[in-house]
Image 1 (tube, rainbow, N blue to C red):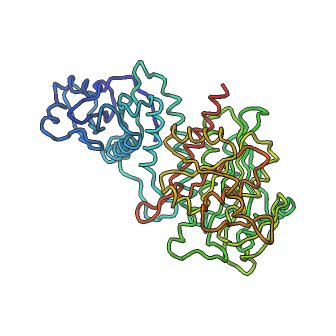
Image 2: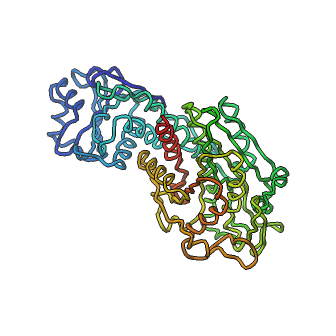
Image 3: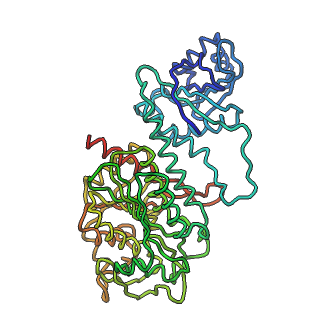
Length: 497
């Protein structure tokens, strides 16, 4: 869908539909009041009759109001005029765009930059309206044979800019780029494991490099990884017929400035290996590459925006399957860093591929390294599906990521990464064990990774609870944490300037 800015009043706007806000107790937004006056009190008439009360998410589509240029006026209930929660705003936008998509209106203009969403500026309202709208409109069709184009879909949406918030073009660009990045992350995540293999991911990275002059893609095969000593990563791929790939996408937007390195876990299917997962819900293990999908989405978003920053994406990609040559519990492998690892559970494989990618990231002389991984079921127990888990060896970086999460409404929550947890990873037979027992599973997983990040400033995002939704019609990738990552980079650029 396309997005624009309009400075016309709601009553004079020439479009298929104008959208104005109604609040509880019958209060009207400024544009709703303007439409009401221009139509000789028609909106008030419907309020007095009880057709709409202003409750959050209510809609009333009106046609051919006298004095209004647009043939349709959509009233959208927004709740309390004093202030709306960010989560409620997302619901309002989803309802709005779904209603428009079923209304036969090809284009519309929304006058919701006037409402108060927790004192957020109009630019925030626009950016987040676009990501919420695209989320509501997203449908997966790649492997369906019976899909048909929707009749009369909504094609464009304009946002009202008054004299106080006239500069909304950049907000639209940011929202569109983030939404596009989320869409790519969703599409990669939702593809089945027999299509979205490590080789497929590598091919998509090459396509991104061809699409943007600012992105250079490099792919390492298993022989090249073996030459680098990536014994930990390659131990995971031994059980699969699909060869592992190490994917690098280098975005150059700021000369010789030290880059931010994003390391995305790319486990395209995780059966657990010899430590086989239960059959129920195993289909969802195609989502174990959502860390890599979010990195792909972030790279395309910043390339689309042509941001003045350097970012390197590193994606270790493999499958984790049971096979005669697969890792066995008790095996010991040697990582690229030279540390030996006792594999006590082959289903704790994400950290085995990430640790070599983290060591590999040293060669880019990074300013910051952030890894993004669907790493532990324990994070779902701790935080549920609303919040990403965050751990870091640098509090300033953690604070910046937490702020980016608040700014983008793609929130994270920090867990401790204290030295006391490291002893759970002690091994009688190797330098480190790949699991730390029942307690603090998310923290000990991050503690394992921290052993390979001592040369730089690092943060870990555990997205196992937020990267996809489980079960029934809701099942599907969410595109998170693309908003958080892009916002972090935007904030970093703003600090620099």
